[in-house]
Image (cartoon, rainbow, N blue to C red; front, side, top):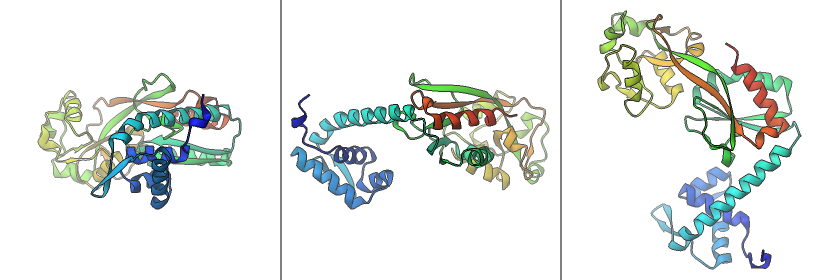
Length: 296
C-alpha cells in the first residue's frame, strides 16, 4: 500500500460520511454529539485535503456534489471497515467494566427491562447500561446497539440470535370504554368498536379479522407505531389495544376483552453481533437477559 499517497484525516472523512447520511450538519452533529461548527470545519478540512467540493447548500440542507457522490461509497466502505475493527476488538475484550447498549421497543424498555436493569446494577455495578428505546430496528453491525430484543428472527449471517419464548398478546380496554360500547361478548359484536391501530397498513386489521372480528378501516380511527403511546391511549379509554399479556394483565386500569379468545402469539428473540458475543461484558448482560426474559 502506498501510505504516502493518503492525504486526508479519517475523522474528517467520518464527518463527511455522517453529514451525507443525515442530510445536514445539525443532524450529523446530534448523531456524533459534537458541535455543528466543529463538524463544519472537519468537512471543510476534508474538501481542502482532497481538493474537491463535496456539498452544495440547498435551503437549510446540504446536497452532495457529483464529486461527493462518487466519493461517498468509498468512505462508506471505510466506515464499515472501521466498525468491523471495533467489533473485533470488543469481541476480544475480557474487561467486565464498560457500557452495554440494549435496543428494545418503547413498551419493553418501559415495562420489561426495569427489573432486569435493577438486577444488572446489583450484580455488575461496573457495567453501565444504555437503553435505545425505539420502534425502529437497530443496526447491530453499525454498533447502534450491542444487544437487541426483537419480535422476529434476524436473517443477517453475522448476527447470533436466541429465541427466548413465544409470548401471548391479548386485547385490552378500560371498563368504562367497554360499558360505552355495550360490553360486547362475541368478536362480531365489536364491529362498532374503535381499535388503536399499530401499523400504517391493513395487516393488523386483517390479523384480527381472522380471529372472527368483522372490522373495517373505520374501526381504526387512530394510528401510532409507538406501542407505548398506544398503551397510554388504551388506558385513557380511547379504544382497544393489543399487548403482551404479561404487561396487560398487570395493569389495573384495563381488562381483557373476550378473555376466552385465543391470543395472538409472537416470539421474543435476543440478538447480538457474532464478534461481540465473545466479549465477557456483553456475554454477561446477554446471559442475564436470557434468564430474566425467559421467566413466565
